[in-house]
Every structure is written in C-alpha cells, then in structure tokens.
Length: 414
Image 1 (cartoon, rainbow, N blue to C red):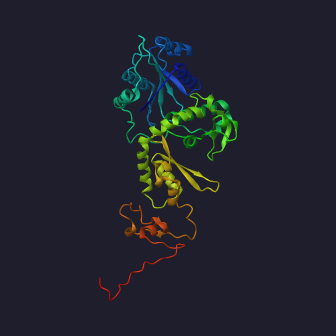
Image 2 (cartoon, rainbow, N blue to C red; image 1 turned 90 degrees about the vertical axis):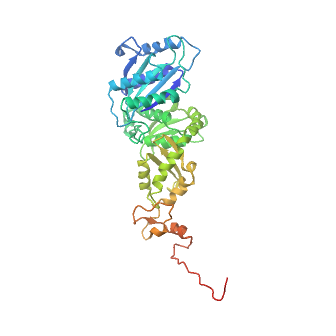
Image 3 (cartoon, helix red, strand yellow; image 1 turned 180 degrees about the horizontal axis):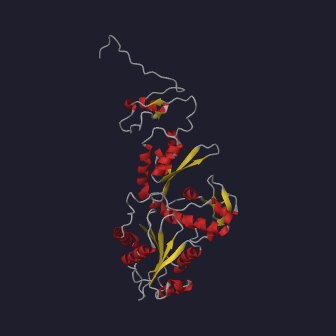
C-alpha cells in the first residue's frame, strides 16, 4: 500500500473533486465518519458545512485541509468492507480517528484506491500538528496496516512495477467533450501527483504513455508568449485528436506556471532513485554487445522502464529519455551518465547495420574481457569496431587485418 497526503487550504475544493468523480460514475462515497446523517441523505453543502464548522473555530490556521489517497497493488481485490476497515485504522494511527472524514472509493485508474477528505482543526479549536506527518506518522502506519491486513508490501518484489494509470482510448473523442476532458484529467492529475519530472518535455514523455500530450503552442503564438498550456489526446503515432482543453479548466490547475513550481522540487526528490534506475538499466545493457531496438525496449519494459527516443526527420535517434515507472521518475539519458546517452545507446543498437551482405564476427570466449559479462549464447555477434577495441588494432573499410610477429634482431645483446 502506498499512502499520499496533500495538505491544502480548501476543503471545499477537495470535496468538489471527489463529488465530481461520483457524479461521473468514477467514484463512490463508502464511509462518512463523524457525521450524524446517513450517507445517502447528505448533499454537498451538508458535507462542506460539517468541516466548515470546525475550521471556523481557528481561522488563523489557513492550511487545514487534508486530501489523502491510499493506493493498493494492481492485483489486489479488496471489497468495500475491508476498505472501510483499512481507512478507519489508518486514520486512527494518523491521529485523526476522532476527526470527521469522508472516504471515497475511486475507479478511475487501473489499481484500487481510496481518497480521504478531512481537516486538522479539532472540536476544541486546536490544530493537529501536520509537520512531517507523511514521513514520521503515515509511513509507520501504512507499514503496520500492510501487515495487519495482509496487503502486498510496497517495497516487496510482488509489488507491480508498471504504472497503473489507465491509457486514454483515442476513440473517446467520438463521444464528445465531457468524456474527453474527464479522461485527460484522470491521466494528467495522476501523473502530476505521482511522477517526478523537471520539464514539459519530460512531462510529455510520461503523458504519451497514456495517449495524452501537453502543448504550449508554437513560439510565435500568443499562447506560448503568455505561458499558456493545453492538453490533447493523441493516437499511437502521436497525432493530436479532437479539441485541445486548456490546463486552467482542470481540477488542480496543471498550468505551466504551477508545473514550473514543481520542477526544482522534483529534481531534488528524484535524486534518491537515480542509482536504482541505473542499476536496472545496467542489468539489461550488460546482457548484450549488440541488440535490436525492439529487444532493448522490451527488456527495459520488463524492468518497469520505458525508453523514449527523440528522433529527427530522418528517424535518427538524437535523444533518449528513461521513464522509471517503478519509482515514478524520469531522466534524460545524459543526466544518468555517458553510457546512457543517445549516442552510446545508438552504438549498441544494430538495426541500421543489419543489412544484406554485412558480416559480423562471432565472439570468441578468449576475446571477452573478464570485466564484461559473457554472451548469453555462442551465437552473439560483435560489431567489427568492438573487436578492434578488444585487440587494440585499427583497419580501414572493415578489411581483414593480420597481427605480425616482431622478428628478433640477431647479433644484438642487451
């Protein structure tokens, strides 16, 4: 289980987001703790007023609204009763057991999860301390809940590494603007909340996995100059479909200005995951001296990594971006190191060299340095320039070469 806590200033905004999901058929209110009225008898204003009554007891505390999500491994199937029990136990461990809170079960992404809305202002007017609540209180709580409820442990190998965000179906545009906006919103909100990206280009590398793209427009347009941003659905070839939707019209306001505030923070937050990503990339690269692009992408995908190439009009790969769907980070290859740049990756991809009449030399076991892994099979092929590096020789136009033995000079003593 993964717990995420967002602290804000508007309980109304949090409730509006969840209630909108309910009205769209993508969520259900499954628990109302600390409310005297039955769930089915409460309207939106009833819910807002319950929290407003508390927040007005201490108006000096502006940041008093909590939006919590508890996310479960994609293969887990948990019924509403167990979800309620988990939510109650978590809130007790968090120190919010006596606070009113609403629990919504969402069905807008591939994995099961719930959203909890509450406030930090108590009945006596005192405020619950929220400093480091995620690290110091929530983390130990979720680990205890994993054990008590027999859930898949977030750090375990059983936890599914691939992103559980649902792809947008490009055909949805035929059904009108509202389904399109809802589908884009689900993807954008999930990506912005969970992934650590440091530029619009990196954001788009992630979004395109789910058939969505963020667009600033051409540099000479007013939208670009005024830092506008809009989102569109794209097909498998990256072509935009339907009418683009302004960022400001989505819940959470994923505008360029708000995203830019995340860039520096995300740059720091992704650093602890850099070496883990490099290690998993190396586990793939070390298998091959030479590999086709499709095989490389497939092997990385098995590690929860999506490698995206940037290409010019001729199809040449000039940039590489690694999306880590395990730790929800994204890095340009050059940021990881020289070995992971597009230039280095191009050197091991054989697609362009696999032409009729081109011959590769088979690797001899004696030619393989001890610090490199042996080929998986004797049929592994090595490009001629790689053999040159091994033997320390050069040649022109791949012509055969011979290593001549030095003749001993007679009559000379040393």
